Structures are given as structure tokens and as C-alpha cells.
Length: 126
Image 1 (cartoon, rainbow, N blue to C red):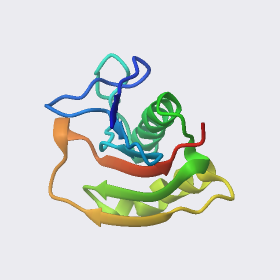
Image 2 (cartoon, rainbow, N blue to C red):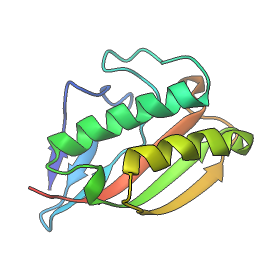
Image 3 (cartoon, helix red, strand yellow):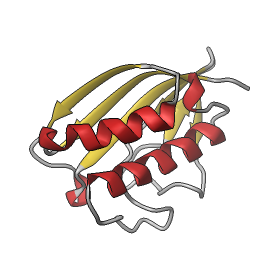
Image 4 (cartoon, rainbow, N blue to C red):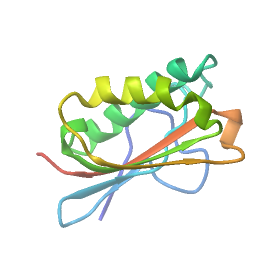
């Protein structure tokens, strides 16, 4: 197994990796919240925060030899499912025709006061 670390996404804020690449060709990302690469929270509505989360995921997937096209499963955590439609619009645009399996759950709170967190499981593409 290999830890993935890229300066193009925020460093882990705890004792974990941005992602782990398995010897079998899988990439498991840690949950990404709307922090920029310098660790500053991106404030704004759910659309702004979701875009930042996707920027982070794409950077980590790239560093691990994958991309959104390699994602097979996504888990989305939101503090307000009333914002689902706005998140879903960005999700659909970012993934294009690719449709990974997905679970979306509402949670009471997320680190740093974020409104959304997304984690992914992907197949390494290179």
C-alpha cells in the first residue's frame, strides 16, 4: 500500500492520508471538505463548497494515478439535504456521462463547519 500526498489539495487535518493506493490497483480517498490547498475553508453556499471539494478530489485522484472517470463509489455527507439539488447539479456536471455508485447522507456536523464532505473509491487508471 502507498500513501498519496499532493500539495494540490489540503493536507490531512488529522492522523490519516489524503488517500491510500492498494497494491491491487484501488485508490481510497479520505473525505474531502471545502478547504483549499493551503488549508483555508472555502466559505460560500453549497455550490461553492461542492466545487472546492471536487477540486480536491480531482487533485488527489490525479496524484494517485486515477481520475473521476475511474471512480466506482462515492459517499457524500451533507449537513442539510435541503441543498441536495444544488450539490447534485455539480456532481452530475463533474462526472459527465460517468455514473459511479453513490450514497448521500445527512449528518449533524462536519469538520471546520463545512457543509459537505465527499469520499471516493476509484480504480487506478495509470
